[in-house]
Length: 447
Image: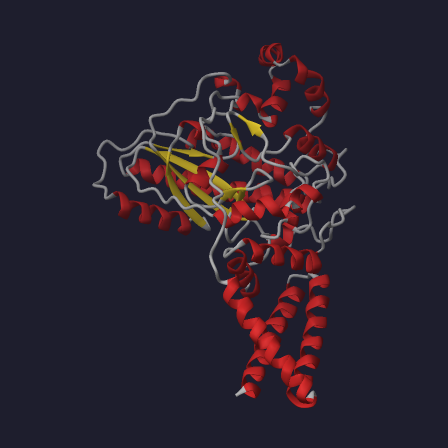
């Protein structure tokens, strides 16, 4: 009996290590592949000794190892996390005029700039320094004379979609069962490219307090009678994000803003044709703050880096939102294991080249404690690089392909804090704690 238990353990562990080895080679993670290969060899030698050459000592070791493995497996499956609730309290809506992109656009509108800096004189000198040139101009470290124009084209396309984000609904609305229609909307969103979709009731702090991105409505209050928000996420190619902070990260980021935007535009128009008001919120044209909307819609948690951390996609995604008067059913879901993981991991903070990601406790702003980055530090680094960096996304342990071994790890860390500490140790071992910054664009740029 003991022989067959040992054989089963040997074959199971060997199969898992072999799968990890091949998956790491496929992911081009050489350090992880070497570690898995070494582990596979040592594992084989150990079990050969146990099964065929160890005598009484091997017999004793075998019993101890199997017993320890059984106890460890049982403890690993225990679901427990401390009572880590999402931050509670009165949340003040965020003013879009405070956003870095809004402040950068003030260069084209001197009168608006005068009004803004009369209220915020402390930001004027810093903003003027950051405003020199454009994000993708030739002074950036990773500038490419051809490909650097591609993100500009993508964002120009989204800006030109202004007339499509809203419209008049059909005169007569279709009969609506909220639960059934929610499932239908999720199906439609998936059909148009969304990897995941959720619904939340629209709350005051989901909306910007005032517009700040466009001159025609700058400073006006954001108001809507929409009751629900549909959040959808599209995945970014991990192979491109692994090249961050070089140009491929910006190419992929801008591409997925377009893909998420297209899905949202079609979905909003579809809902209007069903007889309900709907508005798409896409890059260059938001009324809502997408990350808290997506988190409240059950798509993940707000991570330490201020981005949505999805339970499968991690932070390697882009978000678009559709708000509507259509009655829908909320898809709320909380992920306490993600909140705990972000609290203890700190890999994004340790690796952030601009030190924009907080490494300590949650910062306090707008009435509650919540994760957010120092946007001035982050954006200043973007300008030096000529990309949107994405290094925090690159180093996040959740930024892994959805292969079997990574699915097992995600399940493992969803059980309890001890599992998370063990997983973090091995993530540092296999993939490094601190990753070096790339110094030049890879070839090819698109992969």
